Image (tube, rainbow, N blue to C red; front, top):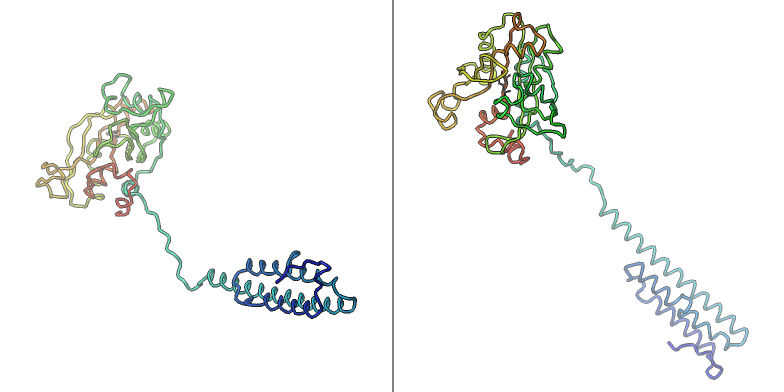
Length: 357
Ligand code: DAH
């Protein structure tokens, strides 16, 4: 299409101007229905109806015509313009409708689809054993007493008959806070002092479950944190026979009614006498195997008669009161039960391990 020069020399006659409008309309509408996006439609509208578009340029020639003809061509031009505006708008709407339909189809929600299953967590194997142990003791009349994990040196060691520089402290190195007198408990035994001071002179039957900490090389057999379940019975005329009978009853509930127990002499500063309780190896039945290292027995817990000094520190007169105490490790028991060879699995956070329980 020629550019409108508007020069006097090349006046454009009415017929030519009308033909040009017809041509503009034809080209503008040609293939309009095939345009697939709004930008293309906008571009075409700009080309024909924009300020410097074809229509406006065609109208620059109106001045070439006498008045009546000018009005006639002007009317024609407005008709074309109206039809083009209408056609562009219609195509825009068609495209928008198609886009909307596409979105609706893409984002459709199938309400009949079953929900995605939510992975349920489960109780950690060490906690499972801990709860099992606590349940057995509860059945046997022992209340659960929760004691603090952050302790003083005095409660963790001193009041348990381990004064400063006592050689037994070497067995239980721990993590200290900025205050050297405040530390993470190495065992649940300091809880014994807390219960006794709270209950004295009333009789006591409690178990104290909870987390303990030790500053140790982490190996397949030792971790820097682990659970313990402590037990304490204090009263009058409690004897070593009560200790043996009670702990054997416990072992039978945990490991089975037939299980045999034995008590070996041991040493703990807070009990006198002290012992360790073994059960007959449930893997080989006492014959000897890799699990019991050929001995036929598995060590289950430490125990003893509460030391008179500890009774006195708890507020009980050792000439009138006696008691027994014990301590066991749920992780160790879980390892025995499931033949887990490495204690590090408990804190490894490996789902392949955890999901087996
Ligand atoms: N506290 C001891 C430890 O961590 C375990 C223990 C042994 C607790 C004998 C007791 C006990 O109450 O009587 O190794």
